[in-house]
Image (cartoon, rainbow, N blue to C red; front, side, top):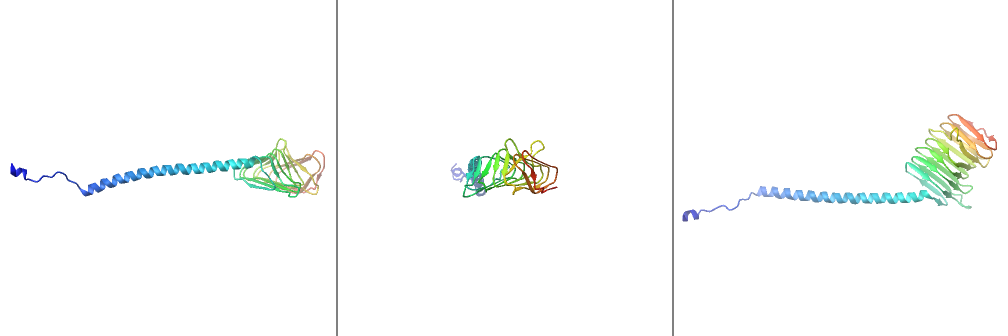
Length: 231
């Protein structure tokens, strides 16, 4: 019995490689979980920053498009479709200018400069619609497709320049309403489609106007002058 009691016993056995492996697996799992949490929070913060920046930019642009007033307006718009209203530029001492460019369609309800100012309206990816009065010394209208005046739309200027890439100017039932204020001016440009123009008052004056389609010109109280029409 005494001999048995003197025999050494093994109370615990540990393998170092197994301990290292278990420690590394536990540490890696913890690190991966923490990284996932950090990534989730970072994504949420980044989304919030981008969203708030977009909302602020949209709010500012909406305010600008609602009413643009100043001595000179030169606005480049990247939105696919734009609707602008109540544009006023220029004073008696500074004629001012309005330049609007849209990547898609563009609708303008009204635009006005001082007597010797200029207006440039461009719809780079669609139709250009004028639903109110556009008044300036020189008005340039450019569209990817058609140029139309609707409702009370009227182009009042001494000189008007028209450009379409693949569309008509006006329609057979509703010609582009213009008012040429000076016989020294007139209408010029290039229309890759049909042309329908109606002068609401006075003479309709043509300069160098190229039309790749049928053309219909009319005046309510005046003559058609110039004869600079080809196509």
